[in-house]
Length: 192
Image (cartoon, rainbow, N blue to C red; front, side, top):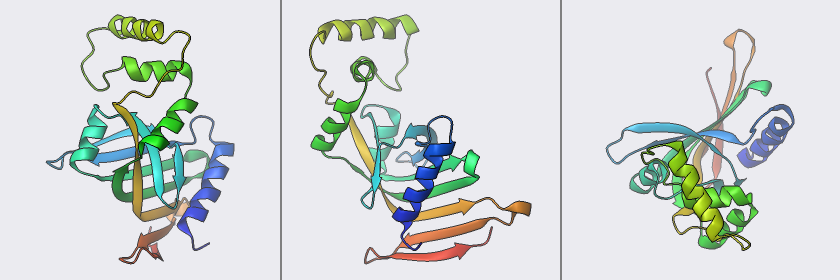
């Protein structure tokens, strides 16, 4: 298979059948404007040839880093399959229509939580957050919950995708796809 997106689709579908929790979990690595790295887990919410999409509060640390330095790396680790996929690329915001459509699919409490949370900011106590959540819940009682203006998504547009398969005696298999200047994909192997 010489199409990195078709190969990702196949591996991802297999992971959805074997990973007990969150087969769509991926590590997102960013760096701030000074180059200081940061990594955290996020959930993949869309993917295809245009890139890999996740959503977040735009006022939090990760969004701030992505806005200041729009490059990121992703890592999927599917232990049950003894596989991982590494993705590196540039980052762009999703459009409002895409963000609105995804937000509408979220559980109502998750929608309300997006309004109540000042993501990544200091929190005096859990009670403060739960009080804010209750206030937001009361404000939107009985009606649809619109997407907050400070909540949207990002797409990592891949420039490189590496597929890693565990093998006995650490003789692993590594396939690397890189995008050339014309947007075409080139495939090669890496030593383990």
